[in-house]
Length: 354
Ligand SMILES: NC(=O)c1ccc[n+]([C@@H]2O[C@H](COP(=O)([O-])OP(=O)(O)OC[C@H]3O[C@@H](n4cnc5c(N)ncnc54)[C@H](OP(=O)(O)O)[C@@H]3O)[C@@H](O)[C@H]2O)c1
Image (cartoon, rainbow, N blue to C red; front, side):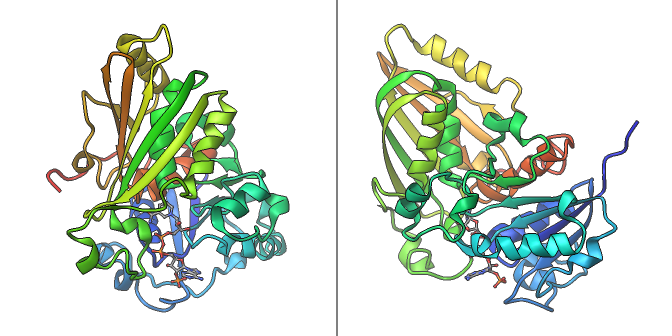
């Protein structure tokens, strides 16, 4: 029997919120032999300086850059990029040249947590992110990493684009409806403040956020074309109206997807669609009525619930933006890409209450 390769993980942007969650999950992953945390702002400092929850779990420090030659002897190398949009796209050619020079290209799996490689069309990318793509010729060359949809393509994949947090929740709510003619679909998404990352900003500043609730980027959020990608690829006809909101919580995405069931469908059939779609998906929990943020925070689970009245149907999805919406999903993608057990390093309940 072949033993699984030892995994050597490199995290770029390791001092950020997503980087911290990656380090937390990778430190507990049974197949991960080493972790190299790269941070320009925290180089030389111990990991707990940026992530105090990890004090006592790692005695290493952040590196200013990865030393690829030092990884040359290793089995599987997984590079996670948890940097702002445009960063990896600007670095990709130099990174790939460095991997080639170090003789490790054939063993590197790259998982990008930003929006750089989720869309495959240059015009769509510019419309969503406001600037031209730095290496548009590479758009479409990454596997879109929504495991519940793309498990077969993720097996052995070497370039993976991790979905956005809203996109994950909304797509997981819509996936059971694939192939249907849905007409107008109203989507409301609610996010916690950690969705804005670790750097302080007006929208994430506690005094202006803690007791507020508001919509933002209504009908123009950059995740809308990403969600529409699933609709197009699955031949699902829907006119999507997506309105994101920021809520006074730190973690969590809650999506409410409202549509009319096509003729011939009723609650029983819809419930069966949900069951069929997710019967083999370990991180999807189908719940009665509304899912809850408090039961998914800190976990890689997405809870999905349902309500119907006549032809009206509502599908709810709740997840932790930093875990199933980001770092946990990236580890799930690593597991699938390297053909490790899908649950490895991720199978844990969260705290309750939070
Ligand atoms: N937060 C979420 O809920 C969420 C969910 C899904 C996807 N994402 C995406 O994941 C990526 C990381 O998000 P995050 O929330 O972890 O962000 P973050 O907390 O702001 O961390 C970003 C990291 O990237 C590094 N970095 C490299 N170049 C940078 C630059 N030019 N400006 C600022 N930082 C730079 C920074 O670290 P050093 O200076 O230390 O190198 C920092 O550690 C983003 O693309 C984000 O859109 C976020």
